[in-house]
Length: 322
Image (cartoon, rainbow, N blue to C red; front, side):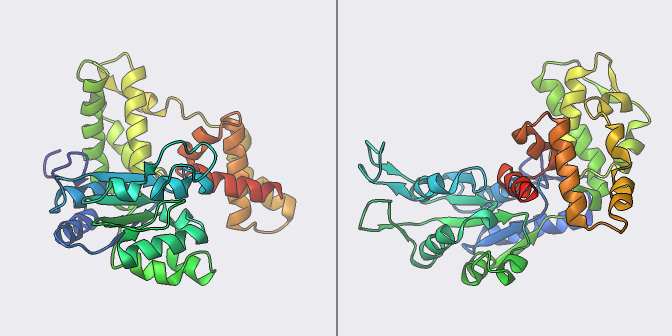
């Protein structure tokens, strides 16, 4: 990783000017108490940057509590965030503090905050305004001393326009915006990251130290990496585990990424069927259907492969079925 910048977190590797600027902003805001909204595609490393901000802050001796707002059903998320009193609902045999209280003194990271429903958005806004939280089933508030870091792959300004996200909450969260560029837009980081993951997973899986064949560099740099750093990491780990050679080849990297010939010309076939250029939304739905078929209906794996969360996959497939 010669010439790269590695922060206190070794997985944050930045040779590209765009990502170095992201880390520069993160360092500058770490000492403050301002709310930060981190945006970027799935897999770009939003939580890694959030952890960096926490680790460089004066709260670093306290807890960093992450929660993926899209991974928990709405009816359960409220009690997870706010906690609940004994007897607040069926099954609440004991009182339980929520994640706001768990993060007291430290940092709460709300990943995919754009997927919160409007009811929870209103309650989050109140917490941000009053620095107090009320457990489900209680009538009194508890004071909080926490910092909120939020992240989303959604365009929240567009969601505000379509009344999907509260404008007042958006401005509360978006005091300091940090946009993480996709991996394909910071190609200088691809090879250093690949080498880092190669070493990491060789050690983790007790493998002899491996290297890349000469043609791997051009392959890695030409790949689009729509799943971003997460896709690159998974690709390297899979190659380390499955390869029996001392050098990782392009063939090793492509293992498990079989192409389905029936989809290779899907765009052409769909246009011919409709006798017009299809919209991106139509093509998007077709690709999701293909991905589900490829993974034999496994929704969690499909969401992971597509670089989206399960809630987004459900919403898009539900819309397709209507």
